[in-house]
Amino acid sequence: MSAAPNPGRRPPPKPPARRFGLLWATRYVLPTVVCLVGVVLFAVNPGDNLEGSAAIVGAGLSIALLNVLFRFGVQSDRDRDREAAARRYFDTHGYWPDERHLHR
Image 1 (spheres, helix red, strand yellow):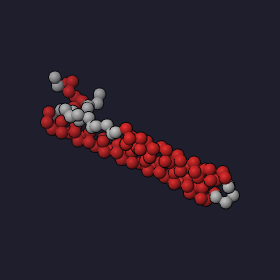
Image 2: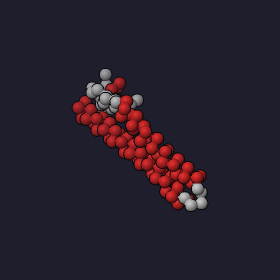
Image 3: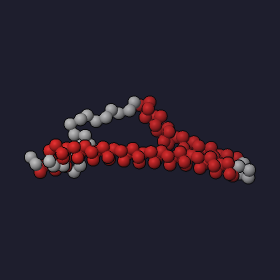
Image 4: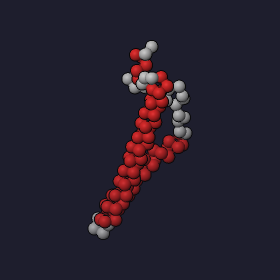
């Protein structure tokens, strides 16, 4: 039983479709393309481009890792906001939001 993240308020608006497409491309397409470029460069000339290809693949993996870390940070902020809302509710009503069924 979990409480609503912001009781009595509307949920935040959803991002426009174009913004979602750009976000999806940044999260998934960009790191994949960068890694594939590194692999293709190595496949074309494996003897000379080992370090360069590895660096490009590493850059693609770094982009992916930064996206993951950013998402963890955003999730942490949402959790903190939910906790603050629950504490405000407790201060106002004297019980936690998920205990509403006990206080009717």
